[in-house]
Length: 241
Image (cartoon, rainbow, N blue to C red; front, side, top):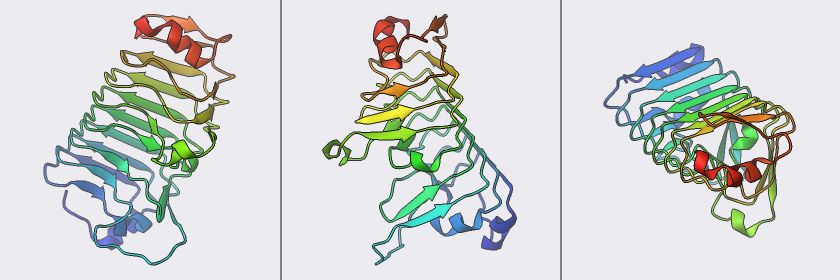
């Protein structure tokens, strides 16, 4: 990808990067603040991309103890496909936090080096997320990874107020959505598909509240879950995946 001049990012609405075999990071840290108008973001078949959003540059230093929040306020849709070297969408960082306050759709497919999608501290900036689909990522272990020191703190609660559909499919290494001490509340979730996730033995170690969910699509059949929590359903149907 030929890097655009900094001034170009100010008016960028749609960004589509495809078949680039040179770039390792799509958006550098010094470009993040320029993306105020960006609405859609698609990256396909970029062989060497390791990171989508660089939260902190390699030469960036700060003496400030306060946390800096960087928002990409209008971004609504992100699609990532066939990025075989991708390790991070964006890294969790104690000094700088990246927020996507209006992101509604995240699709990830065939990103074989990606082991998790978010850390637990990242999801607080995703309150408008409606559709989360992760497919065919053979080394994906969890969707939400807890931070290293989360085991030392009390159980926390993560709220996805707008999440309507969740699809986890063909994830051969997936052990669960989240394995830390996290409770999830998904009041709007009404469509869930879990298929071909043979290593999943539990959905989450915390409680998962899904009052609007009535059934789960396993790829082979639709299963009624209104009277079950998701963890109980996973345990009962392990052989289905």
